[in-house]
Length: 314
Image (cartoon, rainbow, N blue to C red; front, side):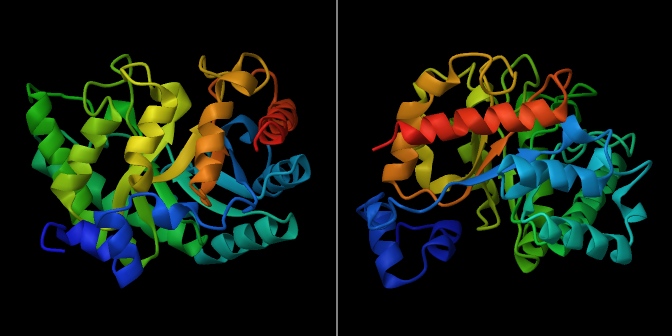
């Protein structure tokens, strides 16, 4: 017990859970959870030309039970535009279509303009932290569970800062909002992104280091198949190594296209099997980067592939 830090202790409080944390990393996960239904969500950017209500309808009809929101698709200037009344309407639209809010992603993509989380400019950094706090409330108001922190352009080094300095700013900013996130029932998840997107946090090991620097149960990791270009280990090895910290999964073809345009149906089976064996009961969320086929096609054909993958599991 003495070897556990504050974050780990809070996360695994309770005698059984602590036992798993210190000696049997997957013992508590593997139990009788093999039949837990998969929780599939879809990110909403490919549907942003539609009203929120229509987005929910498309996602629900395709068979997903969750939606993951890129807030910039809903606002002109800031999330503060979305009133409490509108947030209640958004909740009702999700409920009417049998889905719920998995959480948020693309947290700092404009609008608003001018945000940066790792700049040496203290005022800009504080403005960005304040906006992240607003996003925590938005996520909490929609009953969302996670906020995926990718936002490569808003975390890369600027103004002569070193990677080490930017990483410290990253950790400091997360620490500043961690208590608020915990109060709202939200986890902020650090998303590793490859070097073609950012030079700050490119691997799960680096993400885990930032989470350790923050040392708070509201700050953790997520896994994205597409963003593993700088990793040196296979998917399964990464998921096994960081499983206890992985609170969310993003899925798409390795080139960022929707599922079914590549080899995901065979390449990802082993990792999905591992997640199933460990009793993974969190969201698997579809995030694609080419919207040209249209959101309806992306939703329907990707769900077919998810079901194909699921059918191959034992």
